[in-house]
Length: 561
Picture 1 (spheres, helix red, strand yellow):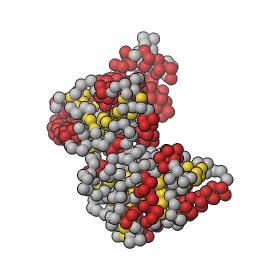
Picture 2 (spheres, helix red, strand yellow):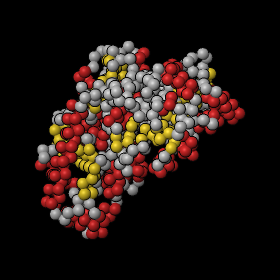
Picture 3 (spheres, helix red, strand yellow):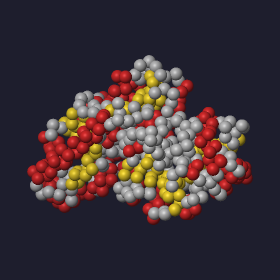
Picture 4 (cartoon, helix red, strand yellow):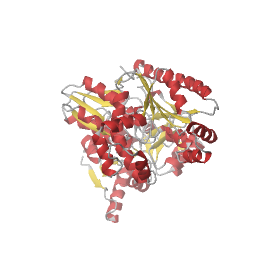
């Protein structure tokens, strides 16, 4: 079979030509053919979702198990009543916020949706893709498009038209090239037929974004481990080994520097490595596929499947992959890596706990840090480390002096007041200074923290701006009522109320830290000793929770070895 190729990457080209190609692709779908289509997540292998014979062809071409349901792609929430029954109001709330976008909702199905599409389930997954070409094709076809990822079943998903041609070219009727996929991982799948809603597959829409809108969401066990042979998947990607290259994959979780060190211990000359950009130089003898900066999960998502696919032509006999933390897109990236590995996962840093503390001045961080020290924790004061690194690094000093001439005195010491006058009145200059500081400071902190096991606390006002949060098992916002903070600063620094208020209001509000951090330690006590005791109890419980998670990760069958 010849696969007709429709190039629609240039959507600003001849409008008539574009419309003709969209109409041709839609006609193939209406007549029962298969067309690979672009979306913002991955390329899909599309068929008329209401045509049982066309849907069966999807399973045949992909080699997809028959009990693995498909997703219907529509153009908006107005299509939901056609194909779904008993639609909860929450579905429309989510659709208004996140459609078009990478969210698939599982709902009760209408009778006209065939068993072939739902794998015999009484539910159906529906989503509205965020790609103008595919939305135009669906509108022109007038039918929902059932479209799993356009790869051969089990292989890494396709994020370019070239990937699609490599996997299924010559076995489908058409291929629409809409350019590289913007996100690179599949949609998030959320089951709305239960209370609370249940996350069945993490994807391009982070769990945290949904929970901010609708509240708590349960996470299905298939997100963290594989289903048993007798268990039936409620959504795509839940049961079977997915995304796998030919060589076996081992995923290494933990703090980035530690997981890189763990891979260094294990690699040989025929190993392949997927790692964050900053660690690629550590593997000069291996085939390396950089995943992106450790703090940039969007780039990691975009590169993930291409990295996995590329090893098939490299000759490697095994692959080791660094895994991001589970926040934001990291949950989806980690899920795909672990499925590619058949949940063959190793945990680095099982005996290390790293907490990041941040918050405004006067909130009580000093008391909280004393409580951590009483529990055996080592406090890493970022301001102190900054001064130590600056004093000992001429390269660091030269980098600052090049951008801020004259801030070093004749004795070679930094005039902090002069530098402060230069940067604090100009946001762009402060950002430039921070970029320089973070470049030299972060590697030093990584080295100190990952040198040995134990309890560490990072004290950093710019915890998130610097990217240091990625080293932490948990980030903690230390907050306090504004009036209490003002009074504490007045007493602590012996300054008038006016200046104390200026210092408080010049800093970020507590809501900023609450929105960024994993948990909050609120200091509403007038007594430092009382807050110290409260902090100690808080940290004892938090540390035990983290250690329990680490122990479970090491001992849980199907998740780790």
